[in-house]
Amino acid sequence: MQKIKTFLWYDGQAEEAAQFYTSLFEDSRTVSVQRYGEVGPGKPGSVMLVEFELAGQRYLALNGGPEFTFNEAVSLSVDCADQAEVDRLWAALSGDGGEEGPCGWLKDRYGLSWQIVPRRLEELIADPDPARSQAAVKSMLGMKKIVVQELEDAVAAAG
Image 1 (cartoon, rainbow, N blue to C red):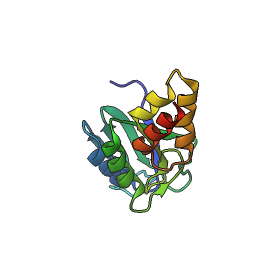
Image 2: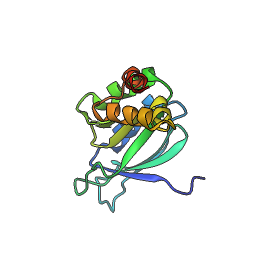
Image 3: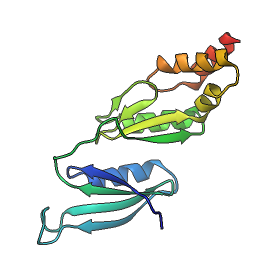
């Protein structure tokens, strides 16, 4: 059993969000759905809590109401193997009411913040040559969705 789970608060979209997220990642599934009973506070029979896994990591999604909303102080960071994975996840998560942000960040249609990070970005930023590393950072700072070829070009130009 996973000791620490991320708990996400939704205003009626917990099950929909869990289904959407599990459709995007391999090794993902809905684990359980709990419903409100007669004592509430939600409508009896409506979804209260959804436990789900994304790439083997467990999350809890609560239909808690409008009192709390997501903000950028917390985000889910996704390690992407290549540009194709970045492109697929970026389109899915930022589409249908989502919002693109700077430097590989976005908000999905539910307001949850994500960082869609190509593995190559982390490799380039860790380059022991400070000029090359800083060229990668500078290039990233000018992007919304991270484009690996643009990072590679910036690093190559730096030497």
